[in-house]
Amino acid sequence: MLIIVSDLHLVDGTSGTPITAGAFKLFADRINELASSASWRSDGTYRPLEGIDILLMGDILDPLHSTHWFTESPGQQSIVRPWTDNRSPDFSAKISEITKAILQHNADSLKILRDLSVGKLIQVMPADPHGGMAGDTNERIPVPVRIHYMVGNHDWYYHLPGPQFDSIRAEIVKAMGLSNPITPFPHEAHESEVIHDLFERYKVYAQHGDLFDPFNYDARLGRNASSLGDALSIEMINRFPVEVKRRLGETLSPELVNSLHELFNVRPTLATPLWISGQLRQNNVPQKEQKKIKGIWDELGEEFLHLDIVRAADKSFKFDAVDAMQLLLQLTKRTSFKTIDDIVFWIREKFMSGNITFANNALKEAAFLDRSAQFIVYGHTHHHEIVPLDSYPGIKKNPTNQIYFNTGTWHTYYDLAVFKPREQKFISYQVLSYVTFFKDDQRGGRRFETWSGSFSE
Image (cartoon, rainbow, N blue to C red; front, side, top):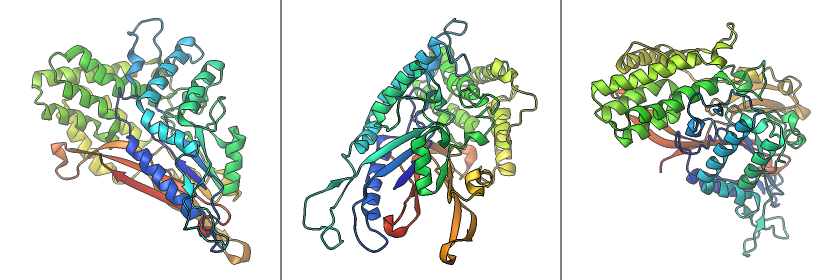
């Protein structure tokens, strides 16, 4: 049995709230149920499952969203950003610092993964002599669980070579119970013989999906390099609440400042300005202070435009429609938050009726074209979906279907309410989704299942 999840975005808690350990407990319970049901075979007999593989397919740990990037003051020699020289000792030290903070902040969640990997949580009933499930025994059979880590655009640092990064990966492997060696975590399947073999056995091809997003992946530089998305996240989303607190913290409530750190979790992303103006309204911030806050926003936008990584971007670089609108709104100047709100509502009504999908990219994958994979799996978009791609005659005239899946996300969301959205009401909840594949006669011969759920705590 192969389970694929992505986009957990476990952060260190300084810039946004990660999903809680409750999601991991729910996940472990679901795997336990699946292990038992997958032990029933297509011929009707019960045979305990031999093992489970879990693939963490990118954006699992998220060093990008952290205020630790601002420990050093601007102008200091040792200042580090994702786009600075990743060969410098300061760079690896910063990634190590943030990674340690993430592992510590999510210790309860990661312990559940670790317990899965050592056989503590997944156990099934033994079989009886007649091919059924033994029902008169307290014996349980542990099911081995192997956990594999691939990187995406928020955790690409763990793809970097070198002993300084090997030591960081060693801590991650230990904390999460991974099967990975401490060498660079793979970004694509061909970089790992283990994962490549896993995909072959389950007729799956999977990758994070950032390859199709030029805002978050620079094809000229490859995955060992930063992207414009990194710069926007750090210099706008992360830095804004830090600057507000630094300059206006004495005049603003701690509740307001803390709420600004949740910008990372606001959905849809286009509603980010609505979240800001909604928090200002709910905290009764005077107009004079609102103008100062807006001034900080504008200043950061101007500085973003003058970053070397932005200026060096090729003039022919093309954003997709959503990224272009997001950037436009974040850099809008000489208008109040209220005016930006009006622009946001207009754009949502005119252009935001659908969801981003990478399904068409699956049609171009070699594994789809040569039919070596029945299932193409991406993450990245946070939009869980199933899209039929093709069906062709197989052995004994049974059609072989090819299907695209997106694994969705595990995330804490502050989602804009659709009733009277101009009142800027957001509702908090957590979501998680995953895809499961079976091989041979597991689960009665079933080939896949998906699960998507949400809950509040």
